[in-house]
Length: 296
Ligand SMILES: C[S@@+](CC[C@H](N)C(=O)[O-])C[C@H]1O[C@@H](n2cnc3c(N)ncnc32)[C@H](O)[C@@H]1O
Image (tube, rainbow, N blue to C red; front, side, top):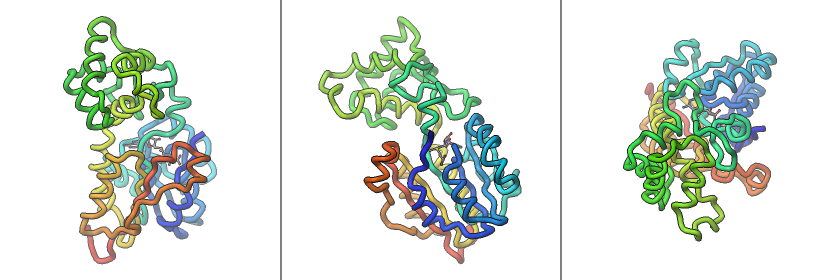
C-alpha cells in the first residue's frame, strides 16, 4: 500500500474549497486526490495525471467509480501539463500538486527493478512507453556518462569505481538483473562502505531511476507551465524526496515573479509520520501561491 506523505499539511496549505478545481500531477494511488475531492464537493474537480498506466487503470476501477465526472484521469508526463489540461478542457485551476518520484507500489509490486533488495529486471520506468530503461543505461551508455549520472544524481562518492566495474562486467556478460548490479557495486566499493546505515547500492539505484525517468528535467519543465495555468491566488505544492529536486523547487519558488512562498522553510513530516511511514523521512513540502495581480 502507498501511504500519502504529508497529507494533512498538503490539504492545510493547498486549502481546497467547495467547487474548486485541482490538478494532481502525480496521482499514483490517489491518496492526496481523494482528500482534495472530499473538500471540493459538490462540483469541484480533480485532474489526475500519472505516467504509469497500471495505476490509472486501478483508479478507474476504484475511486473514479465513486467520484465519476469529478475525477478526470490522464496518462502522461507532467512535463506536458499545459497540453494535458488543454486536452481535458480543465479550467480554471485553483491548485496544483506534485508528489514527486516513485510510489511504494513501484517498489513492492511493479517488478520493474526499483529495489536493490529484489531480484528483478533492470527497468525502473514509470511509463512503459519510455524507450530508456536502466538496463540500456548500464549496458550501452559510455562509462563517462554512467560515472556522471552516479555523481550528479546519486551523489555517489564511488562513481568512478562503480562505473569502471560496470564497464568491465558488461564486456563479459550483459547486466540485466538488479542482483547482478548490486553484486558489482559491492565488489567495487570498500568493505567499510557496506557497514554504513545506507545500503551501498542506494545511490546508484537512485541515480539510475532519476536518469531513466528524466526526473529533474521534467520538474524543471513543468513548474513554469503550472504557474501559468493557475488562477490568481491559486496554490502550488511540491513534495520532493531528495536535495536535487528540492533545490530546483526552492529556487523556482524564490525567483518566480508571480509567486509568493506560503512557507519560507520546507515542511517536513513529524517524527510520528516518519515512524509510521519510513518513505516519508526525506520528504520536503514547499508551497507557494500565485499573486493576485500577475497574469503570468
Ligand atoms: C509518490 S507517487 C504519488 C502518490 C500519490 N500522491 C498518492 O497519494 O497515492 C509519484 C507518482 O508520480 C508518477 N510520476 C513520476 N514522474 C511523473 C511524471 N513526470 N509525470 C507523471 N507522473 C509521474 C509516478 O508514476 C508515481 O505514481
